[in-house]
Length: 510
Ligand code: URP
Ligand code: ZN
Ligand code: ZN
Ligand code: ZN
Image (cartoon, rainbow, N blue to C red; front, side, top):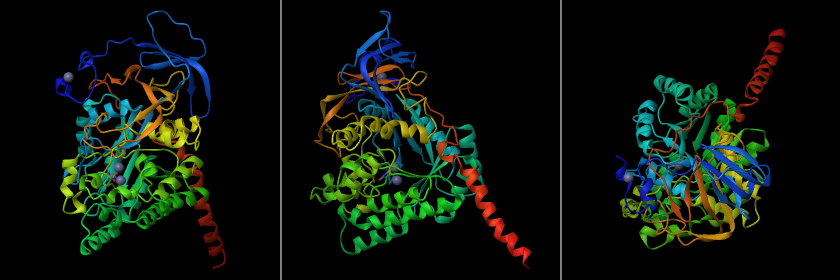
């Protein structure tokens, strides 16, 4: 069964393929600087059976324990990617990375957990989940699920309850774009927000005005612009700003927390900033492509080069990425995802005559940890502790799995990376672990390298070699009512009494 995963391209060890890892279940990481979201200290980390047992200086162990020297390096919680699409059927194609190759790539880049989006089948959440349970059987690292909502009726409403109460899903995503496919309308958005709130589940939005994007596409085709640049031109930042503002206002009206995925523009970021300043619970997720790339690529005369950058919302002019970096450093945006949704050159070529047919999506699951380090920490924009917060801890808190995930402390899962700040990395499609034949970060060189990845207490990435096997990853159930729901009930009660007071006054005078 598992031998099908022994294909070329992934350099995992022959001996570990399909068999349980024989490596020691006891590990000591010695002498590194242990970093958590709020503090760092030089300490040893002792791991047994996949769990962190102790974090303190000078831990003594017997010779049955594997020792890793981390002197001069940072020992940090493995990255958690809140936004991926593995084995995703989309735009007449299917993402080239499945749960094994995508996760292998993630581990090679220092990410030890991801949360993927389950897409309902004909609107059915249960059928969608069943399909994703099958797809994810080959997992080699821990993962969780968000659930998309693509239609609305009593069945969907009931299925949302089942997802939260029985299936370990605590977030639901609404696509405000992709007209004729995944897109929903405001009426559904409101019903969905209401249901999310009652369940203590987090509402997430892909915020672009899908009707306007559709009109923008028609405009480009009428102008004879059919190449990849037409994609970016057809859905400008204002469409993202509008939908972000609308979703925020509707979530505010329902008084439920909101998570905006892939914030790509100043327009969207400023709406989030405004809402947060007014006290509304809004989370903004930039993705690594939006932070570090710019729109110049979609103008490349070579179709395949240009098409690999096509995603929605589009990658914007450079000033947007710079502003998103600043917003991340100031806490206006809270965590970094990837929206890893890779299609290879052949798949991208579906849109060679019409940009509307180019499957939307870029890679990032393997590159995120390195690029955020290089762009944000090396540049001095954020501290090392902030790095842990935006790549791991904040995601764990938002999706209610902290401190099992997102922390180096006794009792937490042993998902750990060792990063050498004095080493360097280089990105290329030749050396990456994704199945895609391209990489949107091709040629990027930077400082800071993830030298070791430990997943569930096993060393899976060491000396540039992966040792992973299908079936070793666990599904992580996520409970509802994260910290974002604190105070929601009190605010509702206050709102109700504010409504009743004038009604009482009115009745008294009539
Ligand atoms: O272009 C993108 N972003 N593809 C993935 C689907 C989505 O909208 O997240
Ligand atoms: Zn095999
Ligand atoms: Zn999206
Ligand atoms: Zn996405």
